[in-house]
Amino acid sequence: MKECWNLDVIYQGFEDPAYLQDLQELGVLVQRFGDFTRNLQEKDPKQGLKEGIAVQEQLSDLAEKLACYASLRQAADTTDADAGSQMGRILALYSEIAGPQAAFEQWASSLPNLMELVDSDEVLKQYSFLFANMLENSSHLLPQIGEQIMAKMELSGGSAWSDLQSYVTSTVPVSYRDQVTNLSAIRNLAYDPDPQVRKDAYEAELACYKQIEAPVAFALNSIKLETLTDCALRGYGTPLDRTLKKSHMSRETLEAMLGAMQEYMPKFRQYLRAKGKALGHQNGLPWYDLFAPMGGSSTKLTAQDARDYLVKVFSGFDQELSDMVARAFDEEWIDFYPRSGKSGGAFCAGVRAIGQSRVLTNFDGSFSDVVTLAHELGHAFHNQCTSSHRSLNQDYSMPLAETASTFNECVVMASAIRDAKDPNEKLALIESQLQDATQIICDIYSRYLFEASVFERRPTEFMHADTLCHIMTQAQTDSYGEGLDADCMHPYMWVCKSHYYGPTFYNFPYAFGGLFARGLYAKYEQEGAGFVERYKKLLYTTTVACAEDVAKVADIDLTDRAFWRGGLQMIADQIDLFCSMMEGSYEQ
Image 1: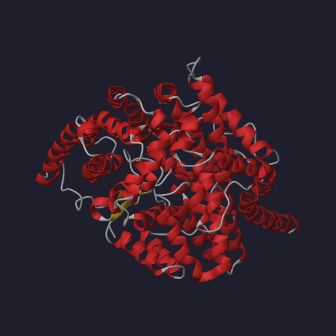
Image 2 (image 1 turned 45 degrees about the horizontal axis):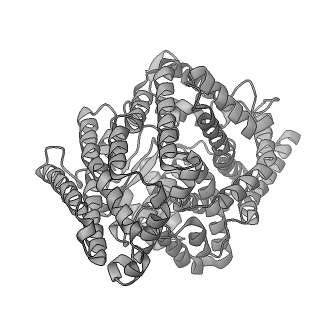
Image 3 (image 1 turned 30 degrees about the horizontal axis):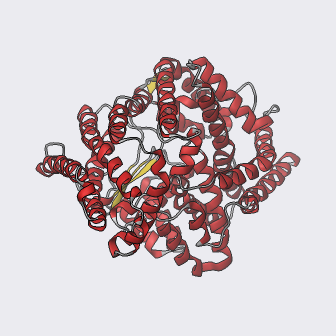
């Protein structure tokens, strides 16, 4: 099994004649779309809508293929100068459609009988959700030249600052025990069974951030100011308003979820203190022991072990999913191991042009890494479930993006806990699941609080690194509370988490996905195999409906806090089980 993914099925390189031809064709299509929108007022409305959709489909398909290749090359090696240059070239070219796109949307939204025209044509009818949102969001569009300017400025603004954060965090040298390593490798040591290794790695990690805190602070301040400027120009009250609108999700749903999370925070703090006590800490859990393994699951797994395990587990849920997982390993969809220059963390990118996805992880052989693979392959399955939609109907919103990934985690963890015979192994699995749950509740809430605070302060204040560290520590205190040791937190989480440098408020979607998926999994446990097809229909629907309507496929009301309490109570029950097991260990 190869350690790196295969991108040759997309292009053979940047000198590949197919790549060069597609890049040239993208330019032709951009010009064609611009020419088309200059004569919209003269066109028959229905014919104009159909022509506009047709050229946008071609643009979307070609730009996605080119950009995917360049961005995947860059993620695998952030020092790849060719990839960075080509990505900039593609984005610059594609930014030319911002003005024509605005002109088309403004024209379409001005048609008095737009939805009647849409309903009268089979192709347009498939884009009913797209056109309905176009109407709703038309008031936030800038004049054509304004959209063009914003798109071009973003290339040397937010996008460039994001690239800077990725580059410096992936290349910063980390001194650890008289050796030099990289940030991804040092962060993986948080899962090491040796407590001294975890502590030393944590200290080495924090020390390395001093080398890069200033440029990353400039990146964060600049990105957030750009977002605030964009929101003001478009008439959004706050960046959160814009995010919710783009997420096709109501504030009522967000408040119901956050309210339920706040109710259950004391339960998570109980878990953290119990884990801390079990590890010999009396004042809460120090950050470096958040991911300390407990019980008897120190076995290191290979990528082949992960493949065999996941294929077997998912075959018990759905053969289509299991077959796709096997393909992902066998057909080189995955880049497994950490290395200098490689982006940290993990992600999945759908590549529509080849009907596949690509997964980047920093696999280190722990069971947690296997769960991460399951998570990212859930995204790949989600992509597969929506692939039969038309080109402009294949993007799902941020909150729904974590549905299939977290559902996969539920399947894997439920199977592992059910099959565990050794009490120590069962403890390890339960505690691992609680680690993950604590991340999507406590840590995500702290990220939400941090970003909200940064947006509140940014209009009148440039926040240097020490200020950002203070805001982050306060957010962690407000979220984790007495569960963490107040003298040992992670003030630099704003540096290493790429989520702050991409879509605005890309934090609460993880809590949404985690709790929504648990609610769906509970339904699967109640209904059995009969639920699987409904689950796949729900995934299919995520690109053509708002979050609330997607949930209705499974008879769920997202605005009801009781639904969110249900998912949280599942975690609370596991916390009670964990605490009782810890009390037993004390007695021994």
